[in-house]
Length: 81
Image (cartoon, rainbow, N blue to C red; front, side):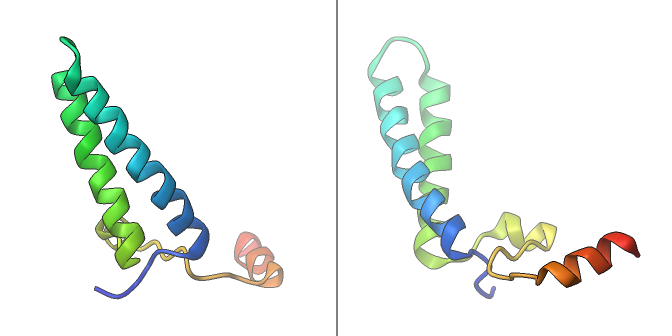
């Protein structure tokens, strides 16, 4: 797969991923939230991995490429058509 994660998207993923991993480990430490903790760790790991590699399978599936920037003129044209 080719890169499809832009700079801003990469920054958000690189912050949210480790945060979710930390929250997941905290949830696993308590009596409640074992499933939520594991889900949080998995999602955080996937976000961190996609921030490092700049490739997101979910973006690929939906045809999203956050690296692309359309000019305002193109956006207006597409909205009118």
